[in-house]
Image (tube, rainbow, N blue to C red; front, side, top):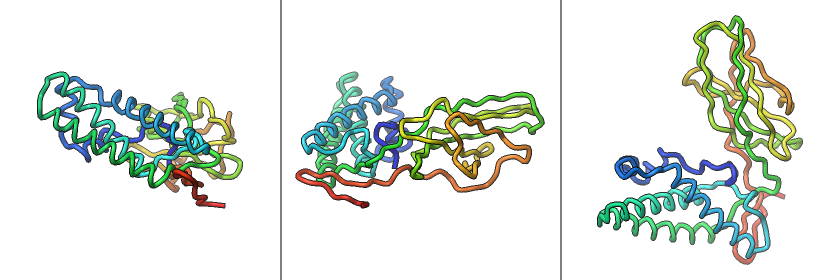
Length: 246
């Protein structure tokens, strides 16, 4: 699972699964859905932080994104979007949807905290943006898709960073490295694919923090796709917690 502080809890496509007209509504009312998702995340983080403080256990930096948290965030985003749409037009249809999603978000928050906040004991954030350099070389023209994960000394692997796409219409060479590694990471893994293919692991052993990876003359290799990140170690509930892994 990805960490909450890694961001991107839901995508625009995820929101459409909840409300098929949300993109059209946001476009028509000039509402920035990405901004609403960020605002909803900030509010969710604030509530989780307060809960953990009350339990005197865990920190928001340790929280992983499970299904319940995704649902809550999606409903909070829809609530905020239809609230703005309503006050833009004072349209009763928007007002009803705002109230609907506000109620659903409150119910989901209650369910989420009742189920418990899932955390990892040694959080490992995903890498920041990759640094991709295209130079002269003999690789054939191609379009590439890249993702990377951070790894630590115990073999834990973070969630992957967002996909970065690079193209070269002429023969070339290509080098990839991470701008920096998150705290606790000792190395990183690179996943790559051509065009719309599924990204696959390219290195046999984790790459060092300052180590660069080059597309080999034989091209990209097949391998496993990136995982979803760290599995939770503990679930914190009101009045106690459950250790999932000893």
